[in-house]
Length: 470
Ligand code: F0G
Image (cartoon, rainbow, N blue to C red; front, side):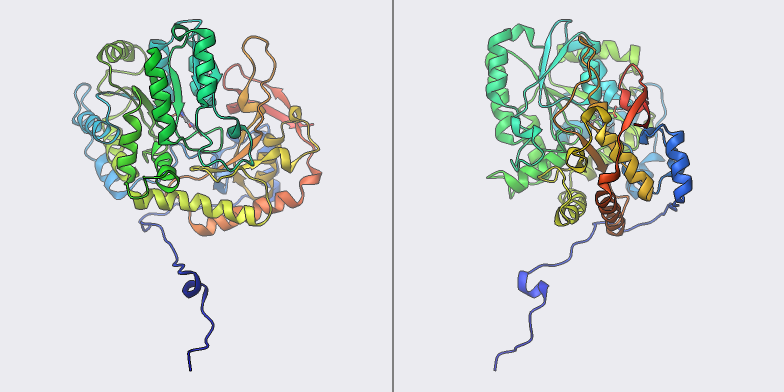
């Protein structure tokens, strides 16, 4: 008689539970402010989650930037800071890590990503030039515009559709890029600004085939390709998972293969690279490097520290290595996916496929009764905080800013609220709590009334704008 015992889920599907590849050595208490306290905090913050004091926040999903938990090895590295003004040994460790793992020849540390964006924009853009890219990022575009350039979006159309299941929604549309080169002439293009993954599209990846094709097209016209490598490790995970021929290649190998098709890169190391502060700019061409090195002393610091302490560079060098380990990246993206799949199961509209660093709630579908001029994504972030003390951020019309020429709001197709997951910080139980809070806000969505902007700063307005109920 064969055994009639029903199979468990695990036996049936071969499913085995998964766990983070680390254990917790130090804890930081969390506190939940009561409803009245949250209401007061939100009014004080002008309904902008960037203006909330962090001690009023329960689970902080504002950003994955600088919010990672460092490892014991990184903290040990902090104690080995060589705080010499010039030629710190930690700089040489960092330089070696970037050369080894990202493959570029010359390195400049910067205080964070936008420091690097500032330098590359000053050096590589002549006023009046165009910078095509795969969807804008706020600080990247701001520095390109400050340098007198204008950004042109050449991402594939699918990127603007939150429901499209295209596996590489970060890809550049080669026809759009070729048409732009044809129309404007190669000399008008400063460089191609390629980001992998694409933050504003929902943490969506670029395929290796795409970067190769972009590089070939640009080489034919003598145009450089510069990469925003801030979340390239996460991008490599999606290549390993989805692109034919890469399933058996390591994350580190894929990263190196990717950067081979670019001429240089900048990174906000506060994301992938698991540090609380820091960034870098790396380049292959010595002449460009020399110009960048001339500029860095004006704006960041000497070329061997770039605005960082020696200890910060040491933590970054170690973080780079840890960030490219396959089990780390699998667990990192696995946690984001766990949260996203709970929401999808409950019918809550999010950007799909689920991206690398965050879940993006589709605020247009939450609040179809709110015009985009009532800031639906900002409203959703405020409602979520009010419900549960969870802090998210707006990625819609407020982030998109105004057209520098007409002064009108940019109205992006994507009106999103981002739940950004810090690396190695929260547990699966926190993700359950977040999912339930989002569900509560979804269930009461008909009551939302929108917001009016009552104060608007000049640059990157989403950081400091203030709102009141519409
Ligand atoms: N590039 C990308 C793709 C980014 O996401 C960021 C920062 C930067 C550049 C700028 O780097 O902050 O170190 O100066 N993104 C943060 C975020 C702010 O929350 O997405 P930074």
